[in-house]
Amino acid sequence: MCLAIPVRIEELLDEQSAVACIGGLRKTINVALLDDLKVGDYVILHVGFALQKLDEAEAQRTLALLAELGRLAEAEQAAQGEAP
Image (tube, rainbow, N blue to C red; front, side, top):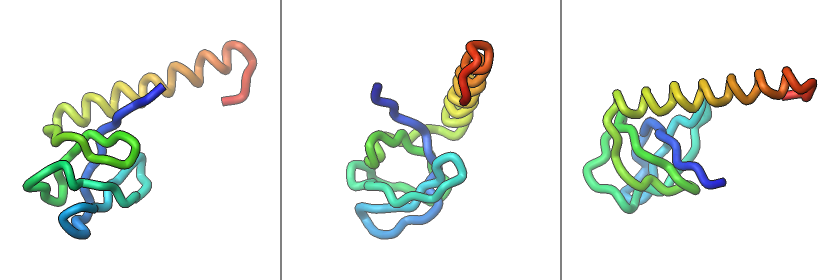
């Protein structure tokens, strides 16, 4: 399954790359497809490429839903006696 996730731009390196915060980890990503990025902007990231800008409220809602999905998956695994 492919998944695009919201990430926050932490640092702009050049016109084509930036550092983003992904679940507390910092990763260099490709931002060549987007214009006018600033530190603090949220983008949708898929396989290392920023695809579009996203407003902070929508990014936070999406991240909260993804976290909830993770908790539900862990609970389901625990109920089935599997290790997370």
